[in-house]
Length: 100
Image (cartoon, rainbow, N blue to C red; front, side):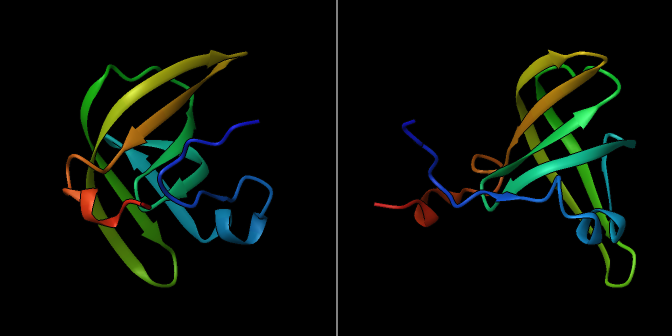
């Protein structure tokens, strides 16, 4: 399979230690983190999010909180949840960090 990702992706869905130490919210809604990179993240949500800019908060239970903005660029229904792709590259001008 051809992987066209610009950034290294870190999968955390099977790592209970990471998941229990962070709360991820998109526009105030608690979501389940699937994977992340410097360019964005993928989450599972009980509700659908419209495309566009959303506020993201990542609260590390023992390390503080980060507030971000990202653009919902894709959504796909999976059983009773939605898989949401959120991009940070345009919001934070990350073009200089892309692999060559």
